[in-house]
Image (cartoon, rainbow, N blue to C red; front, side, top):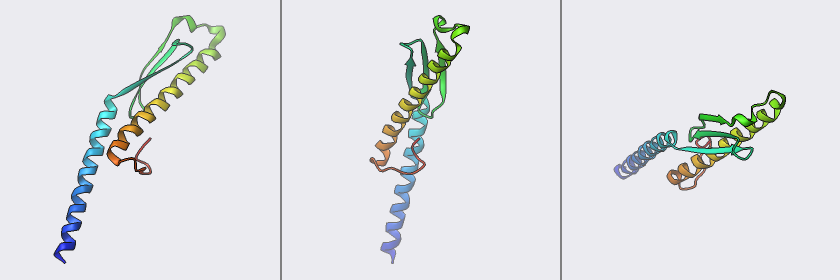
Length: 108
């Protein structure tokens, strides 16, 4: 019976270590960023690994009231590309901890 408890204790310890490593990776992801752009670099965004935007830059050449919809499309394209890249980065970092095992709700 004591052997069974020792195995559970070891499993609990491993779970705590795993949880600690996940927290560390999430902190690292908050500091890591990806850049994305659209319109040949006319609109640029920076997104961190927690899917938060830290900057949006728009080239003054595309700020034209008559072409407002085009600018909106460029911003949307850059934002979506930034999110895609940030998700890929987060997934890659998390898979280092999980060994590639997909845990629902863990990866963005």
